Image (cartoon, rainbow, N blue to C red; front, top):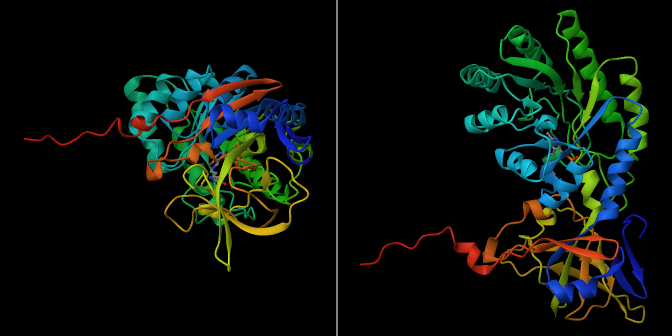
Length: 421
Ligand code: LLP
């Protein structure tokens, strides 16, 4: 269990900090997301401590988990935020975040999103194409307001991760080449409104080694030296996010190991380091609790049918991702089984685990799908007109409801019946 700090068995029941899960399931119903405040806090402290020897701005990637209570905690700790939409910007502001510490990433920002970002004096817009830069120049001139920009360069580094979460290769839709970036920085050097303040890259997600970061950072440093020679002095270097976590038996480096290889590159330089971690902060601070509805044995397969589904947590369906599934109540006397743990949605892709070895389960029992703090609730949908789960934040012995479950009639409240004669 030490891969999941904040979660432990006590007298055969799984606890989140000081609170037992069966009690929460009874009170709030299932499926439900539960987060451990101490697990989340310690990851943030670990990150900040690791990079404390240099000028460092951690910008939490909001897409990983955007619940405003989580953003509020991070804002109170002085975090910056990496956002990808005006919706995420508004969330950050609603949670008390500081716009001047916001990095606005994203490959296809709309004109209204750029306007809003400029209006709020967002810390930096991370630009991903020549056309986007032209658009930003025109909008800032029109608004007569300054805007800070960074260009996202593509270091062409292979992060050895899932192809869907690999984003720094030269054939990807993200970022631009260093050659084009050089030309674009030169073109805005004397722009009255647009200020080139940084350079950024993001090579992928769920990366479990330090080497790709070293390669990317070296590429970026070579690039900024070329800019320096042209008299363009940036303030920050943003190396993105992507730090992997343990879902199964991965052994990702600690933040301190990343710091050991990254900080020496910044020593003696005036650049601030920006990072955009998402998953590594929240993934292992959250679980999805679901109840077993039925056991269905069809000889070739034994299914555990649960009340959560792919609409609540779609990572297994989308990436064949592994999530550890634990029984909430231990019962050593039961026999060993091999199960497919599946949801009620009408798709074969609706599963949480396949051919998983577990102790025998009974209908009514609770399961905890672990590592569900990141890219879980944020990717949830109402498919099959299912209500998205509620979310709880546990702080020691205190339980805070941080999102109530969707009410059924909310699911069609934006829909309009056709007129009848
Ligand atoms: N910065 C940028 C520009 C990004 O595109 C991302 C993630 C991050 C930061 C944060 O990356 P992290 O530290 O969380 O790895 N839905 C997928 C992950 C998609 C990641 C997209 N970009 C999953 O469930 O694995």
